[in-house]
Image (cartoon, rainbow, N blue to C red; front, side, top):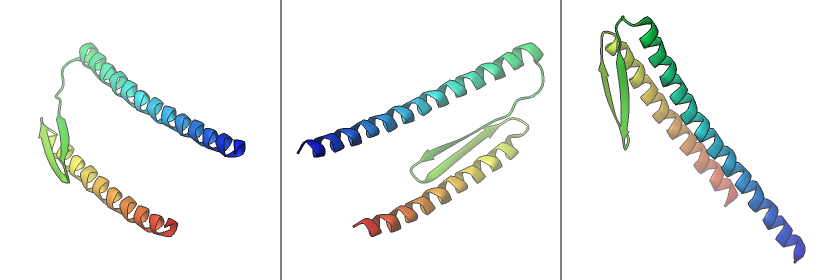
Length: 106
């Protein structure tokens, strides 16, 4: 009985470790985004001038909405569309592999 309790405790501790690691990666991602924004702002303030372009993609369910502004907007929008298609393809492939693998377990 005691051995079963120790195994479940070890499994629970490993799950907590994985959760903490994922949370730290999430925090690291946010920090890197903010550092990138600060570097870009410093570059604009120090060197000024030039033209700026922006683009964004918003997923609402499986439907992507792509927007862009500026002189290079078409290039940015095209790149966003390519990334959206790749992300949908990766999702479908991973979903198919997961279903095959889960069929082996049960």
